Every structure is written in structure tokens, then in C-alpha cells.
Image (cartoon, rainbow, N blue to C red; front, side):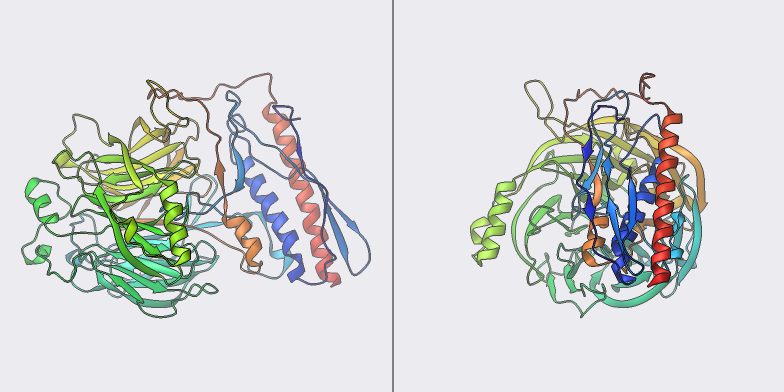
Length: 619
């Protein structure tokens, strides 16, 4: 019985006869979905959230050599008991990313599977596995900024994430003198490959690719020169045939070809864009009389902004044909045409201010897209603000059509796909801006919250996202209202990352040499320290790596890599007052009933595993 007395029954599905291990991918897929859903339900408080699960699985043998599996699924869409809004799993485009986590993929998450062809090797813990790839600084003298923690002898660590928010250290690699200052990482959206880039202010950065294994071990599968200094950002394009790198110090943008099948580099840099157009850098490096880019006083800012400094490159998630580049040195967000067929950064359409144009420096650092709305968020490192932009989807579509027809891009010059609609502070109004610089910005996969890290205030600022269209006297959809400030239990939170369920958040406190784990309330947006804290020298980046079943067909894998949250828009008060708890309706199903259903689902999955194992022995 469901809360809203509404059933969503799908037709009975019959799979073809199974004769080999490769034909069992569909059943493996069902096991992964069911087990992952049951684990998700079992680790949540049943009074707060309930998620989709497989209600009924039946197998009917037809002969000694083949079996037909008849599936009848009843999907239950569930919501907080005190709220009519519905959370449901559905197929969407992937992040990031780092979103995650970047704008290439508005939602992030995938289920994990076994690489072993032995069916009996599939178990609940492995199927729902996700790893975290954590990097550290090893040589402060090679950086534009000045960390205050300890240098790392080994710069790469891999952890397994457990359901209670704990981490288990699986692997340590990357000798500090060889893998120097890896500071940004990107997990491939379809393969078990992670890319990381080194940060060096005087010599070109290196981009390294590793195959990451379920036991946490790493196998290097390639490395290339980044073509510039202080490499700080990596993006994989929608077709997964090119990796785009950003070099902070000399501001250059480079495109490197990838193998879609293996994720390996198939060659060196094939395209480069230099926004300085060959001009010599004016500012000196820190070790040659330059400033420490960790500071935020007037003299430091003057030197930081004498040259352009590209800090990220995010492709639009709608068409994949416009590249947005926050230029910290010039207080601009630049818009470039990206030729996704050739893997080429083309002409610059437009450049617009990253903030309110108050005459004070902003320093745009990162840009993130909302997963549902035509809205983008830019975090300004120097002014401690978030700028909210609306997106012109019609212009993006026009650019995409012109690209497909091979038309000139000149007619789009001077036209922007972005329009500023809000600017909001990330620190308390009375806190000195000169004592803070912003780190990361992230849009939660539900689309309901935006999170920013503050280095100096040592906090995460959490904003609630307006979910409905504005009317007279009301804020516009996608604009932000402050939830609160939350201390990170450390110094200089350079980076943070959600687990792929979106209910735990891990913070890298660079200058206190720790990472700390917090639980995240999907309803209120508030975080709570779990008590899990780990010592890591100068941690600077945390990359979530949900393991992918590489024995499955590509189409099957894509079904998992694109699972995310979608929350229908509802009327929402723009007040910053947010409920701190969920009220339970005693007339609704209690936790005992819920646990009974959960146990039944687990038993049915166990039966399916046994049948699959028996089929494997027979064939």
C-alpha cells in the first residue's frame, strides 16, 4: 500500500533465453538495482525518506538449458511524510561531477557491479560500492598559493565509502617527487578511469590517467603534457572523445583526444587556445618576488588581476557547444564556441562581468549548472559571492544548429547566453571579505540546494534554491536564499564532495591536514558532523568514483551512470526560514511495516541470485 494510494505498474517483461555468462547481464542489472535500492532504504531513517525498490521478481524455468525470467515490478515513489512533493529516481544526464560535479553533467550517480564473471561473486557490499580518490600537495614551492599544512610523501589515496559515512583506506600511491601536487581529478562518466592533473607554476602540468580497481588499486594507463602551468581543471566532453584542461597560471585551454572505448589518451594536445594571445605574463611567481595567491588584500589582488587567469571550463549541459570559462584575473565569464565534432575551442562569443560590477574585484572561480532549471551559478573567490545567471536556451539551440550546418559563428559574437539575476554573499555580512576566499561551489543533485566552501571563515554556506516561477513580490526560480553557515571542523576547506546518494558530504580541510564527513539532510539542507575524521597531509581534492560493471554492455552501463534525483517544482516560500525536522504522520505506515517490506525484497533478490547461480552451472 502506498502513501498516495497510486500504483505505477509496469507491464510484465520477458527476457530471451539465457545461454552464456554474457547473456546474464540483464539479471545482473536487476540484482544491482534491487540490492542497491534495498541498501539505500536500509541505511536511511524510514521516517524521513523512502526510495524506489523492486517489489516482485519471479523466475519460471522452461527447460534444463535455458530459463525465461518473468519480471513484474511495482515502483513506489515516496516522499517525506509531511510533504506532498515526490522524489523519484529517473534517468538524467550525468555529472558530475565533481558535479559533479561541473556543468557537463547536472546529476551524478551510478550503481556498481562486479568485474568477476563468477555469478556467485556478486554480493551486496560490492554491488553498491563507491570509492573516493583523494589527492594532496607535495611541494608548496611550486604553487601560486601558500598552503600551511604538511607536504605529502605520497599524493594519491583511495578510500572505500561505507554506509554509515565512514571511510576505509584501501591504497596509497603517487610518490610526491614524481606525482607532484595533483590538485584536480575527474572520474570518467562511463568507465572505471580517473584523471588527475599536477599543479606547477614554473613547469607544464601533467595529466595522468589511472584505471581504478574495486580493491582500490590504481593502474596508470597514460599521461600527457598539459601544455601550460598550474593546471587546475579537467572536463570530459559529452561524446567522451576529448578531455579539456585549463591552466590557471598562463590561462591556456587545451583539448586532448581520448579513446571512447578505454578512456586512454590517443594523442597529445590537438587544440590550444591562449587568451593572452602570446603576450608575456606581467606578474611574477611567488618564489620570484610575486604574491601569495592565498591572500586577499588589495596588493595581492592587484597582482592576481594584472594577467588573465582561467580557472575552469564548463560545457553547457544542453547542447554541449558553448564553453564557459571563469577568468579570475579579469573578473569575467568568457563564452567560447566548442566544436564537439573536431574537439576544438573556437571563437570567443562574449565576455560578461561575473558579478554586480561594483568596481570591486570578484574573481570568478567555478561555474555550475542547475540540474533542472535554465540557471547557472558562479562562485566569486575574491568577493565571497555567488552570482546567479539565467540561461538563454534559444540562443544555445541556435548556436548548435549553426554548428551542425557548418555556418559561420561570427553572427553570435557579442551575444551572451547568460543574464545576471542575483548576487548573494557566502559569508556573514559583517565578516571581513579580505579574510576569506571561496573554494568550491556545488549544486546538490536534487536541485534544492547550492553549497559553497569558505577558506578563512572555515565554513560551508548552504543556500536553498527557489523552486517555482517568481510572481510579483517573489524571487525568480533558481535564485538563492541562505540556509546557514556550518563549520568544517578544520582550516581552509578547499574542496568537498557528496557521495553518490547525496546524503553524505566529505570536506577536504587543506591546512589542518584532515578530511571530515558530514551527513546532509535532504529536506532542510543542514549538515551534521558524523564523527568520522581522517588525517591526510594537505588534502586538496576529493573525487567520488562509483564502480561500474565493465562486463555489461554500454547500453546497460549508461542506465546506471545516468541515475539521479528529479524533484518536481512546487511553490516555495522565499524566506530563509527552513524546517529543521520532519514531522511524522502516525496514520502513515510505520517503520515495522517498512522493515517487513524491505526484508521481503531482499529475500526475493536472494532467490534470483540462486537461480542465476544454478543457471551458470548448467551452462
